[in-house]
Length: 136
Image (cartoon, rainbow, N blue to C red; front, side, top):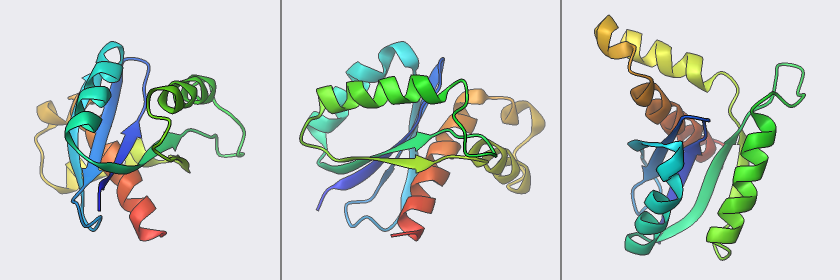
């Protein structure tokens, strides 16, 4: 059994989370620069078996596309080209950034460290993946 990999796509950074091989626990993996995401994912999927990619799909409160929705849709097309044999699931990512920030606060992370956007993106990807696991 392979891992599930979740992506919180952003124009500057991409947060990435994965499950264990039993697909029980979601953990943050890393955050990579947007320009480096293709190389990172190709290397990771070459080294690790990934059963599915879970891609956070941004929608507004009214279920309408946001400014980032079109970028994520284009990235989804690239993912399908790079990994044609790996299923890709689009999942609603509303409120994940706010939930990630709340997680950092409740965990007692100092304010200076909470400003680290890369950490926030990685936690957002983890929340996307955990929600996906929960709803399976």
